[in-house]
Length: 94
Image 1 (cartoon, rainbow, N blue to C red):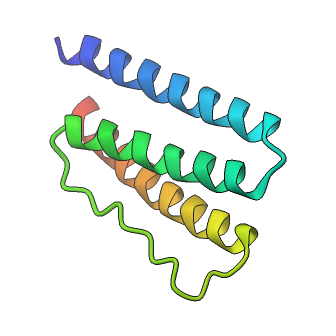
Image 2 (image 1 turned 90 degrees about the vertical axis):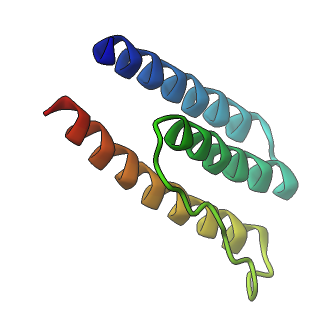
Image 3 (image 1 turned 135 degrees about the horizontal axis):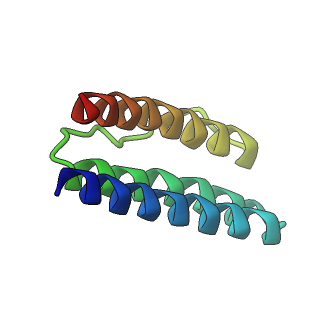
């Protein structure tokens, strides 16, 4: 059962990342890039919460005035959440 859950979670995560990447590739606007990065964080947050993890998905945008700065902050949060997911997944595989 756990193996099937892991496969399902990984499939959903992969689909989320691919969808986010597709939106990022098609949207040239600053708002599109910000929303794409934010959506990626939100999707990974939901995945982690569904696995029972305690998640801090907050992103402090204070001082981030440009779209690139905002996207960078969301990407950093995504990397943090990805590390949390990888750790959780490794623990469940033991």
